[in-house]
Length: 503
Image 1 (tube, rainbow, N blue to C red):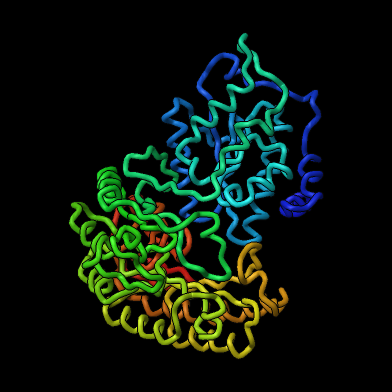
Image 2 (cartoon, helix red, strand yellow):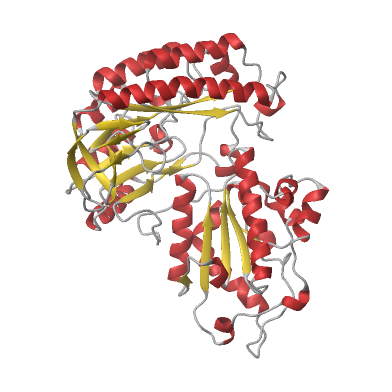
């Protein structure tokens, strides 16, 4: 990583301003786009970082661009406006985002495109807009969650600021105009609708559907509620209309996402749902009712559940998944820890007993289900005994898919102020030990699938995924014989190769 990006990632420090400004090319290199002078449609480029939820925001922003009569380019150097859609979930994500912003500014200087508008969106912008305006004056506008559907309009306004009556453009930068000062709302409330214009960035056969935005959980390590606001669900009719449209376009995999997918609909109930409320369709809209409605949509496709929370699972939801053959036998359920003391300090609103009973119910109620989870190592105060408890739990439950994160001390979170912060070396050692155990488990699970015939979704002519594999994050099936991209096929698994399978 460029050392200047590391310095600039401290958005509260004096070094960040000097580091960013150091990348400003000399004024003599200024050049203007002939497209603007000739009144051709503006071209917009985007670099999107972070999770699938952020990717959906990127798709909505680009949809707004097209609706405004602009063009989309995959070449940043050709763009009249370049958007960096940032992530701020953990420190490494923030550093990556800052580095991308500085690199984009440096490149527009090297390409003699100082008239190119640089716009920053996403969680970093939502959370730190005020500080970033001071530390990154090269950025023309910072936009937040509530502005994702208005990007086209924002770009038009930015370009209009530079235009003179004779059609020429000013060489001065409008870095701290009234426009840039009023774009990020502190408590976002936006949620997309079925008819929100989108430019899909996923393969033609797979797509993400954001069923809700925001989060109500008080996890002590997390600042997502501060960035994304409180949980707010889309109406079922809106989601169903979007899925029908995607299926009619040939999409074979629908990935349902939100910050907490299992809490879907509960904020729409007349009677307020508690933080540990299980799914109960007698009280109003729920994920279970939504899945039953999706099951009735004609066509061959998978529905995959991502980002579920253990506190909200119920027998009704488990039974619904078992009965709906379009719902993938795959559950993404981040647990973060299993020791009761750790779960309490993390404010996870659940317990070891609840989690163990839930896993038993999931495995018994949904035959063949693949469970994906994540754990955090090195949370403040985590003892060796508590870490060993986690390792024992991992070994006994043998999750099909598992990820480990080293705890990141997020400013503004409760955990960041806790005593007994764990040294980086200890966190890294625990990470390596946990991943070593999971690697053995995953390879054994892969070997056990050899000889079975599986239904696969083809991502590339020689690469597919099984029902147990979500896009981008899970394993692959390598095909010896090419297959049509975007179609379901049946293949016999011939061997395992590390995490992947050969068919």
